[in-house]
Image (tube, rainbow, N blue to C red; front, side, top):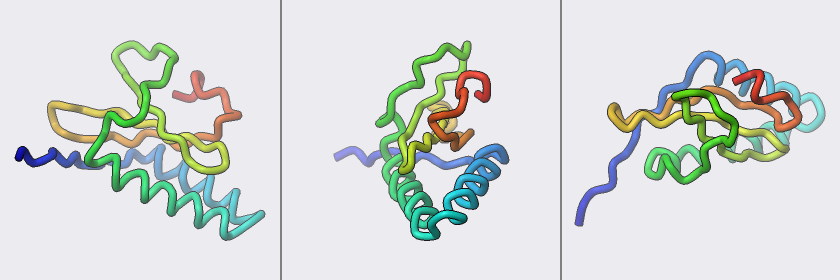
Length: 105
């Protein structure tokens, strides 16, 4: 039986900033909601490193960049790009779905 590849994660500064802003915003209204967002992200990432193509490519066109979109609680979306050559998942952004995502990415 062939061993499944496990991809490395690389968190970009924009991802860290977005996540902190999302958690802080949720924490103001409900600390458990902020915890839920973090927990859901950790659970999704645990699967993502084994199955990086499990989420769809974001439908808007960004040239060579093929952002994938992972849903999170409270209408947040995580955007990442898989590099098959280096077996790396580059985590780019965590954005609320109400934002103009096309302009931000």
